[in-house]
Amino acid sequence: MSIRDSKERFGAISIFNHWTLVAVVLGLLITGLLLAEVLPESARPYLIPLHKQVGIVAAVLLVWMVIWRWMQATRPGPIAGTSAPEALARAGMHLLLLVGAAVLAVSGVMMSVLSGHEVNVLGLFTIPAIGDDPAQAALPHMVHEYVGWAMVIAVGLHAAVGVKHHVLNKDETLTRMLGRGA
Image (tube, rainbow, N blue to C red):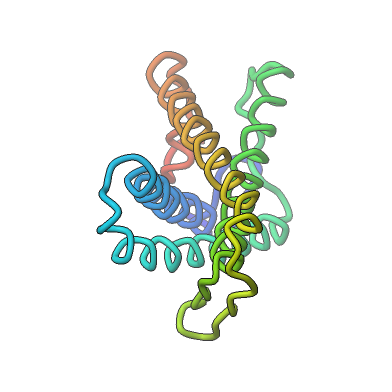
């Protein structure tokens, strides 16, 4: 398998980027849902710092993923036989997932620093708190919550479409992101 993408295949780095970001984003969505909907308040001091650090990792991965995509001379497009509306939906979903992940990272940092909590960036440096006003933090909190729920839906749809292509269409959409297929 090639390291770089071609018109027919995703390269090893794009595949690694995709599945690493999948794992990290799923972990963030699960911990976010647990924090918001399930766990008692007493669990927050233990899980929120982990959620923040993994969120920073996701932001770094996202930036790397965008840089890597930009560096590719070519990338696989939709599989042969894909209609124009399906190709547009494919591009729109990929853009939605990337933008949604970026908005979650920014709103999460803003929510923290406006709530009086610094954000440690992987032990390299700290973004200091710039306020301690619940009213200031309300907007980024609302954005983080609503975009988080939208991402749960978008990730679920993205996965369901991949399975649909594999099981019903029997095409190589999913297998080429696994490093196999045309």
